[in-house]
Length: 201
Image (cartoon, rainbow, N blue to C red; front, side, top):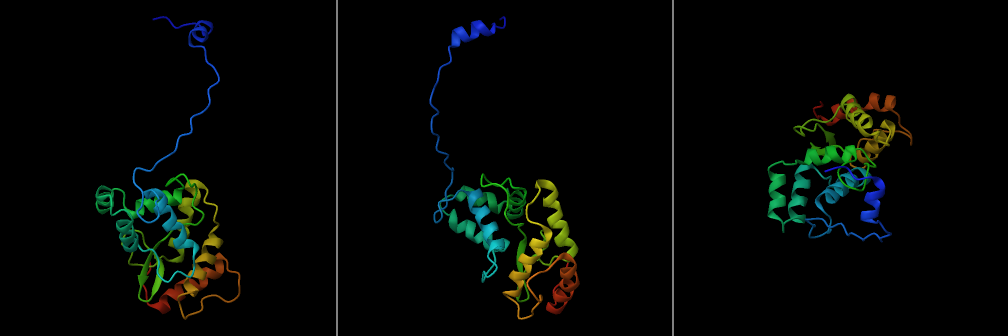
């Protein structure tokens, strides 16, 4: 069949002004408490975990799984996907940090994996969750997502946030004054972790 000319095509089709239909986007699965879809629920957990420095309990991977199971108990298939790690909590965290987890956009705060080591909730290695992140590992974690999606939070802002979280739960004061930068943090971080008796990666 020959390609029609523009004039002939327009004469045949005759486009006219048509109002846009309003399409309501519906999540296939909604949480029983928050009414959020899976991605939006996880996005909220990751954000709050980093935003609120006075949380009595952090969203560890184990706690995120428990919350997920409660939130989507009406959808066994959804729970099964997380049990089979398709995707895993770390996969959700990676997408959050990249700004691709849901339509709410880029991550306002860099998300870490948190775990309780001895008496403190600390940012830990992503694979095992048993070792606290050293200063160098913290920087690499930030740098990775800063390069991938231009993370708006600077490294010094990340450090200030971590200090607030840690000083809220530790009897050891690790900061004097209101301002901290990378050089200052580097000098006190390893010493602080050593005092707390935790292994680092």
